[in-house]
Length: 100
Image 1 (cartoon, rainbow, N blue to C red):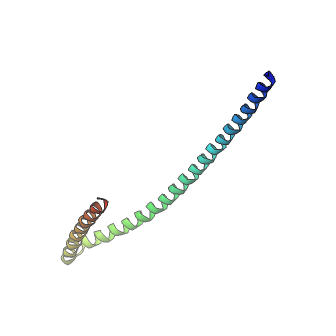
Image 2: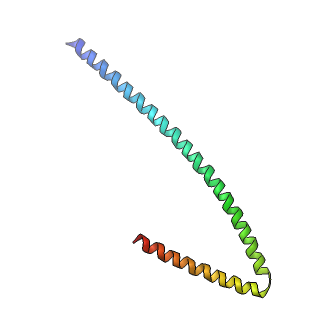
Image 3: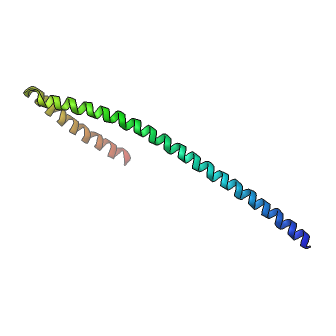
C-alpha cells in the first residue's frame, strides 16, 4: 500500500514540476514579448516625436515670419487664428456628441 502511495506522490510531484516549468517558460516568453513591444513603441514614438518637432519648428518659423511682415499679413493671420479656434470648437462638439 505504501509503495502505491509513494508512486502516486512521485507521479503527482513530477506532474507539478512539469506544470511549474511550463509556467516559468510562459512567464519568460511574456517578459521577452513585453520588452520587444516596449522597444517597438518607444522607437516608433521617438521617430514620430522627431517628425512632429520638425513640423512644429517649421510652422513656428513661418508663423513668426508672417507676424513680422506687413499689416496685410496680420489681418490674414487673425482670420486664420479665428478659423482654427472655430474649427477646434466644431470638432470638439462633433466628438463629444459622437461619444454620447
